[in-house]
Amino acid sequence: MNPLVPYRPLRPPSDLDAAFADFLRVDVASGDASDDTIRSYRSEVELWVTWCIERGLDPAKVTVADIKLYRQALIENNYSPVTVKWKLSILRRFYDAACNAGLRPDNPAAGVKAPRQRQATEDFKYLCDEELSKLFAAIPSPDDAIGIEKVRRLRNLLMVSMMALQALRTVEVHRANIEDLMEKGEHLALLVRGKTRDRMVYLRPDTTKRMREYVALRSAGSSDKLGTPLFATIGYHAGEARLSRRTIRIYTDRFLEVAGLKRPGISNHALRHTAATLGYLHTGDLRAVQEFLGHADPRMTSRYAHVVDMAKRNPALFIPVKLGSAAT
Image (cartoon, rainbow, N blue to C red):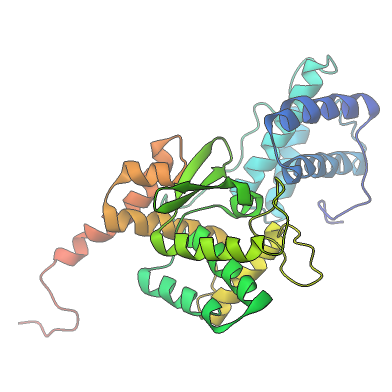
């Protein structure tokens, strides 16, 4: 039996269930977590509880050894170290809630660490200038269309540009509303509601021009009520529903495929890496890139500088020998 095969949804025993429900309601939801985040927490806990029940374990009485066995099952099912770390962090919060409710004296997941990531700090993928130009060339031009098709093409162009040029995360593109756009002199800025804090992203002149065109066409046929999604379904009967993160990924992958750029590691988040890396490459301003990305810790941003600086300072470049030249 695969230890992590999907299952019929099972719920934790009532006391644990109630404690975790309070945790989700008070600590997570009141912290403005997205619906997707809350659903993912519930799903991870259900996965854990099912794993316990299939092995005759009471989730309220598990030991550190049980948590370690679960960690091993995750590793054997080819979950990455980052994913295992995230899953264990949810279990720690689950049992924190149990401890706070007086259901356990200790947290069995507290000391269980995720496997080490055996990767270089610069092991992330991004597009170079030429590849990024190819990506934008693969997106059908709004200038060659009229009506709804023009609006749809503008949306797609802007959606990709917000990730590849303005460094937004997929979830930030998904959450953006029209009222988050603000006039800042000659330019537009977007209030981005990030993972831990909000930030103001100033749009490039070319992006500003396209965004104004897009919003004007959208406004002609939609309501101006608060919460209107910036990136929505476009069509006669589409209803302007907010694009899901999955749909955004599908569009991005399609354009990457057309451009001949789709390869392992090149996806939505690679576009954010692209904006960060190229931004540092062309400015050399680490502080500006940090603010651009919305990083609270400069160490998160420094990896982009490390990639660029190592490429420039590669000792191999300074060895005065030509490849293939005959020895003298």
